[in-house]
Length: 405
Image (cartoon, rainbow, N blue to C red; front, side, top):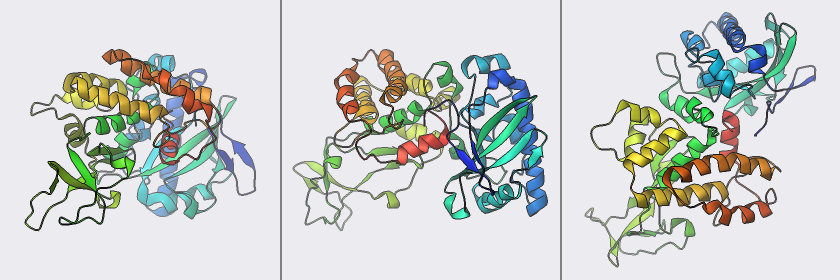
């Protein structure tokens, strides 16, 4: 959800409810806030180890470095960024996103239950979560701690995100990338959700194939039936999933000798089920797959792949005019499309706020490439029935979980 404070109402064992609120970083003082949170997490790690004879984080340096944090929390808690620069662009936070190893799910739930209503350190009292049972957890536990900063009491939402960690005890590259929020985007006034939107648009825009046809799942080399599914018209060979990475969406139909099958001079492909796809999650490989940069890749370019504003620079460097126009069309469709599939609504019953979030990134995109503002042709229809149609929750739930709106 797009809001100033957290969206969780935590419930204690006794039934007491605590609604999360805005965390006023600037008012607290960024340095004081950083030191407090580091102290809190180190104590939690200590208590967790005492309870289970194992670490929640085997490498505590990722707490002090800020590497354990995701979303906008990653730059709020990055000690290499000066205090004054952080609060200039991020005066408050809606919640704190903290990565924990996915295998700790049940133990962390039990640990949190054991500290119900208790102070972990002076000034940090645990008030419960919105997850009543282990089976209800899913990919994260959303809880509330009341934090006391010299009399300023803040009901702070903390989201424990269960993610893959490496053997060295740190979040994997994909865990960080998929949950990333760039300070460069924040400084540019662009919500981090646009990074993921643009990755989706990039994958689709650069891989449109008008030289192939798609057959039905049951087609064989000697009995080809072309699909009538509109989703496979002008097929996009490459797709990006915000939760799983890049994948190739189609495979060629072959005869028994391994030769490709053609109809009217167009090669026949068959849709590859998501369950049968191999997802690419290595950042360098995603960079190569989506931008085709050639052999001499600059390290600075790979770093740009992590942000929306960086992606714009990469598109300018590596993409041609036709590809950028296709990316533009797909980006527009993802933001405000109504046919064949309706674009995600990012804020329930608040079309004005949905538009405000979406238009910021879109305008940056078209200004970068001198493109016409096509949003004026689609937003009226999109917002006419906003909130009145059933919309898939997958992407919306994902971005809400990251606090990247």
